[in-house]
Image (cartoon, rainbow, N blue to C red; front, side, top):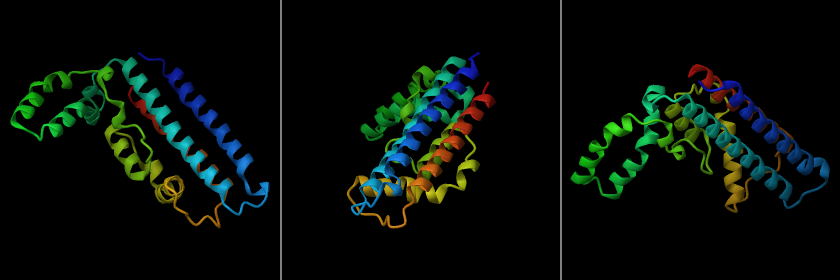
Length: 209
């Protein structure tokens, strides 16, 4: 059996490191640094804060999959929907071959091997963040991993509009209205979201021991 404490410590250490980075964002870009007519400080804070959110989530994914791999059970015996990550390349092959009769035959021929596979054959990109970790993406990933989404629900609007939406606007050259933007509040919200996310992954590990 895996040493669950080691994985808990891994996630906690990653979160603490991210929390320190977020504190530095507050210290370097907060309003008390003086006027910022071009909004550069606000834009920098938005992009860096999102980077910490996405980066931490992916770190949790890596720790969680390593935990499941060490646990040694088949993917289907862990969470049925995780089989999406074992069939991903086959789905892509089906699409690339326009769902031809031969492609479908090959898909079924490979079915048993995929149903019996373990996490060394799992495609992690299925549940990783890819520059758009909004509520919809997070909800999909949680459904695949069979996580309870309840603790994230209340953050839905703020996650989509502020953490992800503002980051997209800045990254793609748009000009979001940041006149009332509160860097400290934005960073503190993200730091709290990291705590909730860490709890989700750690609780999932306990459930799957």
